[in-house]
Image (cartoon, rainbow, N blue to C red):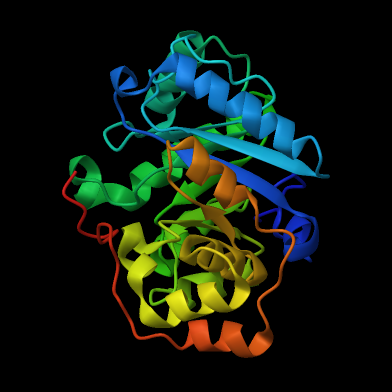
Length: 288
């Protein structure tokens, strides 16, 4: 029978998120050559200094390609997150790649380990079986203390239902595309019913929303940027936003979400914005 594990990223920890949760998340290119380590470390020193003034800080560094950091970047004090790549699945292969990743990253453990896509091309015909075996490896790593939390990314209710048939631990996170105009109510509802924290990737709609007239008007009303309105709305919905930025000024701006609150009336207005559709891939038909 599935158990809901106790962990620092549980949905319960998000109750009153707009009052207590402080999050910084960043994700970068797959190629470390695109990141200047001096700029990276300088930026995060500034972020740490800012977050030092807050309580219950969570600093998330998404390590998308397992070779990303290679010891060049100072990520001490941060939340280390890896997504298993689309072509790596199964019990033995997952454990092998995880071990190799820790060595390459010079780390002893990860805070969060995710299955990236539910139906990658390499396993499209037998994805349910392969995901079950992959998840069994995730549970082993959790039980052995190599990871502190395990989850999935881009899993819809049908993918989660298939996984839960044999899972001993309910996924702690489902990282899905979530933003004004694309709220995925069925997936969100399923996650809420099963105690799965929804982490919102592309909370700005890959930039599409920054010029939306209604959001621009709200930004002017609250004397904030449009991005801050989207991120604050996301937090007040009880979802964990994952903004993408490598620009220091925007990173700092994304952090300044905790000294204002969007009214219920304005939040309802954002809820009702016209559908803009997904900006990423369809989880069932991703071309990788």
